[in-house]
Length: 66
Image (cartoon, rainbow, N blue to C red; front, side, top):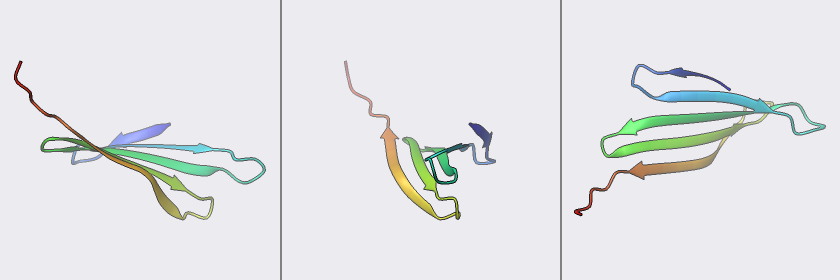
């Protein structure tokens, strides 16, 4: 995987994988901070460049009293 950090603090990772006998497909994972947690979006990218969101999650911090 390769990646970078955006000016907004988001982290983007990119990779590819071979689904034989087809050409390689791409994969992108973006994690971005939110006021109460963070989001993760995973996108599958076809060899032609078409993109489909495969996973989209939001993680939220919840404070509980002990």
